[in-house]
Structures are given as structure tokens and as C-alpha cells.
Image (tube, rainbow, N blue to C red):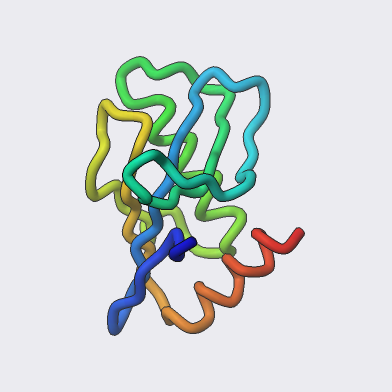
Length: 104
């Protein structure tokens, strides 16, 4: 199984499969789709209306990784469950924090 993130010089890109209106705000396990793409599963309590679920996802990821909300940008998947986030910061540090979340 491949990684849910990719590294660049000053950021990482994170692949997420979002469940809005999910009952709780959480980052969960990793899943692989039929095409072999790997996604980090996330749930937010916000509804998918007027970008509320996307904003809740950005806030959740920022909190879990210990970065400012302004460091997290939605690159693709505005109206889809499958999203790509860009998280600005030291890639090595962000990958370490992400691995701690996945191991918990």
C-alpha cells in the first residue's frame, strides 16, 4: 500500500476521503480504493453545505498536525468526498506528526 501523502520542498500533500455529517470530528484509518489510490479517512460533524464540511476538515487537520489553519489549503475535491490538501511547513516534521496520528 502506498502513502497517503507526498512530500515537496516546503509542504506535503495529503489524500483524504471525507465523511461529512459523520457524528464526530476524527482522522481515522487508511483505505485503498479499487484503483489502488490510498486515502486517509476523516469524519466531520459539519454538513456538506456551502463549504462547511471542507472548513471543518481544514480545522481538524490543522489541529491534529499542530499547524495554523492558514497553512492548510484545499487543492482539489471541493464537492467530492475525495480531497487533496496542501499543508505548508517542514515536510519531515509534518510527516512525523502524521505518522504519530496514524499509529495512534
